[in-house]
Image (cartoon, rainbow, N blue to C red; front, side):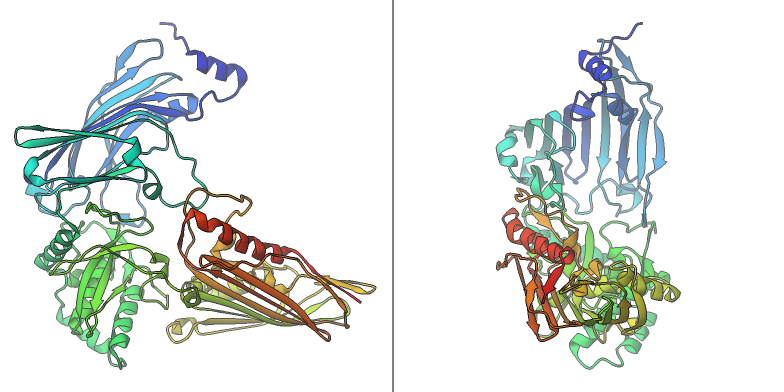
Length: 631
């Protein structure tokens, strides 16, 4: 049969332009969930997607569903092509089942997929799938589809999409006695309609939204689930119930029972410890540095249970939960009260107790009763015990008495300082000579130490590259640095001795140059400089790597005495979120330059963009604008 292309596709072909702003459009997305008494859920998903152009056709040549065969069952029930000319074609269900692409964590996740075949713009693909089970594997084979927290149900439903959605529908049928709790976030309460009905001993909740448009994300914006409409549902009564369950499931599994080998290692490690904090730090850093991050399927226990100490200590590898579990075990062997905890790295956890977690950490109780959070996954070769890249982050401790959801506090910028000090001189030929020293602490220390994250033979090249990146004419005559193997004893310090020919431009009565320290030396420790600050306004919250303090000072001895000083003008910034200040001054033949940048958060509100943007723009301007001195 002769195919007839839709009008818009013909226009696109004739003009060579894309007629649609998106390659695909979801005509409708329907999900129906039915929960059993045990917590087992049956999910039917029905979607119909239109290819708007040839790129959309390519993207729809295969439809696939991700699942974990250890804990979920998935099947395609039907696939149909609705041609643009009105014809319908049933697609043979020759389902392929492949291991899903993976990196670092190899737990056997799979993908079921059906090949659609040739499509043309305007064609629509409709398919229906059935799923039972949950995301994480935990229990034995007979009950592998029942969720870990038996008898309970939760779900996280995004009412946002990266492509246009004309209609989205989600319904869930639960036993009324389960007392389902739900909430809509990020404007979902205004865009999603809700209704419910009671049928016998069950309640059916329905959520519907129309005309969902993709959000145009601003650079470095927060996760979509933190900004766009979403629905959270849970039958758990509160976070305390999740906390006690998480404690119990790991105690029952025997995750933290120390073996004689573990006890012996703990005793050996704690010989130099003099205080309670010494012991905590020694054990945290040993686990961080000696348990390699690598996840492979080890059978039962790949979900919320943490592998036992014997396995972790023997294999010396695992994912976050294995590193956390090893630390809990070692702390208990040392006499501490320690517990596993769950968190969500770089995404907000909201009040409905759905399982909004992607990371496992450790909590230790001090003798005075206070708890300290530890993260052996994020602090290998880091001077902190809890990475401040995780500040303003939610967590839930698994305690026998239960715990509520909590958030880590802000970490003061001075905890993450980077200090650059230079003493230089310019001769009558414009050659710059001197020393420049960088010192850093906290997360800035971690970033600077990145030059050592390679074979020792490559350290010298990496160190030289940092200065040569500023000026490739530099001749480095010496580099001294702290012992990287002793990173816990002191912050990192690196000192360069150098000379740079023709660094300054000198003519009759005038000299021009940019202070070397102002040129974003060791930019690797200043992630804020990667922000695009051309836009004056911002509507979305954003995130940097960490709070930070940048302090720069340089004294430059000049070849002659100059009377007039012309330097780039910048507006000072004074705000709790971000501040900036700088000075230039002359004393005889010596010019002194000083600059301070303070960035007060990791996660910023859109209203913080003004002072943040100005502070970053100022630093970039000083790095590229010369100082001019005249006689």
